[in-house]
Image (cartoon, rainbow, N blue to C red; front, side, top):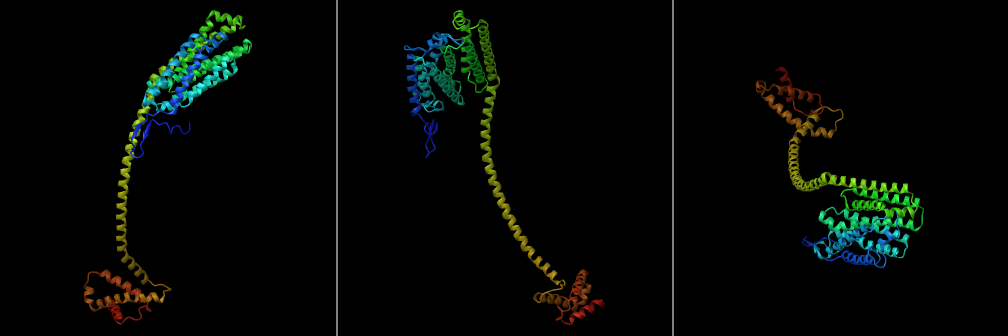
Length: 436
């Protein structure tokens, strides 16, 4: 199936304008389905269930009567429904342009043509009385139709009209081929003239397979009711045939079945029929009251979540843009404030460095002492002004400055080599301060 989806599309998109248009052109699946249906009709009316050359219905109901035989009426009803329903399915794809490239056509794909090829091998082998080969082809037809019905069952967008159009005819065909495959299997063992014990075991296995298939199909959702319904009806037909006195006597007299075992198998068939019927009714109630409302609620929540997610994405994008802009403004303001604080802190740092340099150090380079002479002379000039006006310094209320000058002068006295070049006014100031 690789590459098919690139060719068969329900809509065509113009990549330049982005416009979507409905694809109403024909595709390979429509022609293959039409050709396969015509071949199928030819097989059905020549060597199939309504054949004039040979008849598979007669082969499975009259020529070889087994413990699993069904009346002819079930064959006629089943194949009339299959032929008419599939004919409408093929015509709908041709006369309805909007449905030529829908998902139902794509999911059917090559299943139906392949089924027709396998069915041709089945009917022709029955005509040639090669029953073992016919049984192998019957299993092939059954498996292909099961795959087709499961592929259609994943087509979730369909409503009941879509189910009746696309999935219904394929599912009915699959269900009835399950029944015919079971019958041809029992016919093979009858043709091989096996003992009644072997044939009873094969019949029991066939009945068990039909029961498990019906229950497993009912346990799934979305459920396909046609397959379990057809299997239930077929099992009921087996029970009715076992109740038929002519068929019952034939099994006892000609096939040498023991009466006790035959009666036990008959009531087992009735029990299986009732079990499938009860499960069928329970499943209908569960689907109507629980599964379908729950599925609709989940779909509604998904639609709402998609809308809310799209809204959230839009608002989130706008918020992110606003946050980015605000972060940029804040970063710019912070950078400006940092620059300003650095400019304000630069003199303070120099003063601190200067004050630290005034402290005595054991190993001070000569080059650094030369740099510190200029600020010491400026301080001494300020001290000289205070000595020239002792009266103002004594009358000044800012006495802490005197203390600070004392401390500074103590520092200066502790370093006589650095201040060796100062004037004698420095000595008079110290004496005057001691007098005060």
